[in-house]
Image (cartoon, rainbow, N blue to C red; front, side):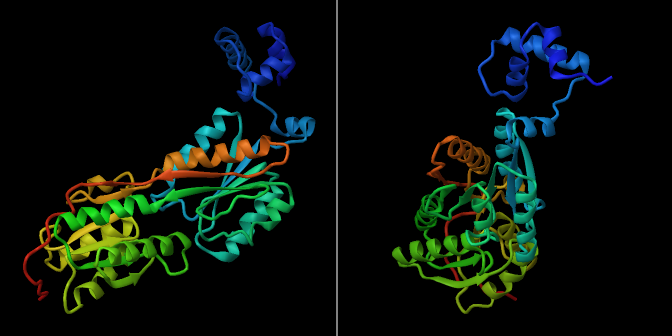
Length: 339
């Protein structure tokens, strides 16, 4: 037998509106009332009818979250932060992957509109404002990462990569490094290019021109392949800055295979601080990007924007910081010759 919200309300001794508030976590309800309602919900095995609610309120309970690739360890903490915050407010999440493919990204945008999401967090560089015009035209709020400025139905979360990168450069300067290479992410990836430019500018400011500067995919094997170019330079650098932790892991693996000791002969620095970065050997020095906080902030930005009468977007800022582990050490004092 299927039970209704009225059945729950009658048995719990409250109004249907109170049951709705408890289930959707939209208002402050006393702990005793909340527990009583939830006990009845479990007793009757009652489940919300989201379609009925959508018809009655004219609003969806669904928010979209667009990422590049579920297998990339950058994203799980971001997803957790976004989803947990959405669930705490009584909303559901539609997760979409672009797989770094432009045509797939267009299909994702279409899927979000067809699913009638309230808002969407675009946490991938493979989708830009031009591609999301259909979302805002449909009244769907959008939040981006490092793609401003804010405007009506558009918010932006700025991740301050410069702070962590500056600390990383100061760290290697203090260790006596004078030659640095950069293995950045893809040339068509917006945030990868931002990181590359910040590294080059920061190193140049400290009279350490980056050489060589290489682009590769955010993959372990891509980082490993890029090391060949680094080791073939006339003056092998003493430190390698990597555009992601995955690249850094590939770099360290390839250096070990080439007989180069990390960090005694070449230091390695990553970016992201993915969950297993500390498990590498040696443990990876990296720039922490607060991804769970990024997910929480992205949802909060959407929720706040959509609650405003004019739906004006806003800008939010998150800081990065250097996590020093064992993959960096004082610069070697001799030239490195690869057999």
